[in-house]
Amino acid sequence: VKGHVAHADAITSNDAHGIASSPVVPKKKKVVLLGTGWAGMSFLKNLNNPTYEVEVVSPRNFFVFTPLLPSVTCGKVEPRSIVEPIRNIIRKKNVDISFSEAECFKIDSENKKIYCRATINSNSKGEEEFLVEYDYLIIAVGAQVNTFNTPGVEENCHFLKEIDDAQKIRKNVIESFEKASLPNLSDEERKKILHFVIVGGGPTGVEFAAELHDFVNQDVVKLYPMVQHFVKITLLEATDHVLNMFDKRITNFAEEKFGRGGIDVKLGSTVTKVGDNEISTRARGNGGPTSTPYGMVLWSTGIGPRPLIKEFMKQIGQGNRRALATDEWLRVEGFDNIYALGDCATINQRKVMEDISEIFKKADKDNSGTLTVKEFQEIIDDICERYPQVELYLKSKQVRNIFDLLKEAKRDAAKESIELNIEQFKSALSTVDSQMKNLPATAQVANQQGAYLAKCFNRMEECEKNPEGPPRFRGTGRHRFHPFRYRHLGQFAPLGGEQTAAQLPGDWVSIGHSSQWLWYSVYASKQVSWRTRALVVSDWVRRFIFGRDTSG
Ligand code: FAD
Ligand code: MG
Ligand code: MG
Ligand code: MG
Ligand code: MG
Image 1 (cartoon, rainbow, N blue to C red):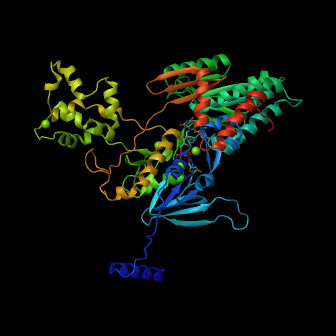
Image 2: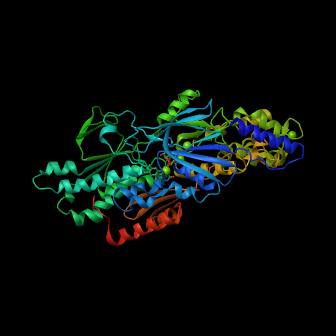
Image 3: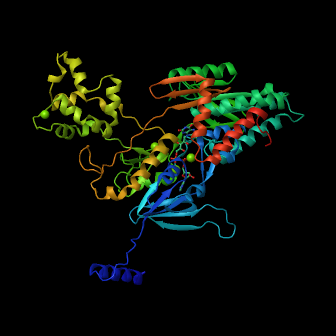
């Protein structure tokens, strides 16, 4: 190494004297990316700056298209159709990217290195550990299922996070029907085996319930007619409604549709324990737990941080958080070379009221101590970009700017003549921060964050000339580096029977068969490669014509 350095020095000094001009190739900056899920895949797909050397570390050498995982559980779509090998994505890039199938188990931010453990089964060597050094670290490890420490969940429940989970569920569902069809079983036993319980009425739980219900009505009736009457599907939800994050109309529609279809939706019902054969629940308000025999349970109640993230948060003084806090440029708080995105991270949005004097000063260009409409209008776009809650606030009040608010309050005649002093400015914006919302843990967010961060890396040189970070307001400097801004494109909730609920921006709600077609086309178009797109579409067609594959 020494010799190498000396050689490089020699070349540079020659260069300085204008004698030789062989170019010095600077050492590439090393970017280490943890995770090959939505955030990681999106970063890789969008990165095209060849001045970096990228090392990807993930226990999984493929990307999973998670929105179609529920479709895999009952055989509507094949597992292979929704995964894309990460090496397929890498080989198409002009960037130097390598991959190691391993998990990171410790981050040493002081010495800029991470500790990894190979996850490939190797009988001879056992677990293999290694170190990776980085200049930039990108943490995109996602989250894990949250069991809320409920006893028996780890041991007895299925989760639906990974492709293996979906395959296990599929196998278990089919085996349940085979088992219940064996001779010499009592009706009680058949009922128990065919009692499917879903814990959690979020999008995943609801979609699985719908898939299972479709499977029973479309295929089981033909293939296992003798046992179809023993099937029972129960959906347990601890709060008052399923699909909480959706519009009321969708929630109501889903609950009614499930009710009509014979899915037993139990609201306000908390699971206290999952035994080998029985699941115990406590209904809100009325005392003791009740136990019910079950055949299979899917646990889908939300997510929590992975051990790696928990440990790292403790290390950097974020110990009591549920996800890694970053700034709006996705940099982990306190670091300028560590980024975190997707389900493992959350953006710590700045509050307007913390910066209010500074905002006022910037806006008050003529230093008059008051803001005019014109002064405000010149800066409003920048404020909205830096503080998205302002835009949400103005929208929620159905006005375009704070002068309109003031005009209403004061019933003042001409808006143009209003000027705000700092106190009035403060009080006009005093409640905007209540509009701040954490972004949801969705593929949509992770995907946009990955693409955003890749764009930042694509123009990192420009940004490094501007080490102060991005200027806060527009107009300062040509190479402005925008903070991350999420664009919500809407969301779907497939409800079974070829019906889907769609909630698009602007609270546009549509439920039914036409949204199901929209769902098919959106999810076909969102596939990461033409290969998986072709596979998924042909799976759909196959299912329409031949029904589901029930070889388990
Ligand atoms: P992930 O996609 O989970 O990726 C994490 C990656 O990190 C994986 O490759 C993992 O192997 C790797 N990793 C884990 N630990 C380590 C470690 N220690 N070291 C290195 N690598 C590690 N969102 C939507 O927007 N729409 C939907 O319809 C939708 N449907 C869903 C259905 C299901 C069944 C599920 C489970 C999720 C669904 N989501 C949906 C949510 C979406 O999948 C997540 O929000 C998204 O995957 C988050 O992306 P991520 O990159 O942060 O994490
Ligand atoms: Mg990821
Ligand atoms: Mg994923
Ligand atoms: Mg997040
Ligand atoms: Mg002024």
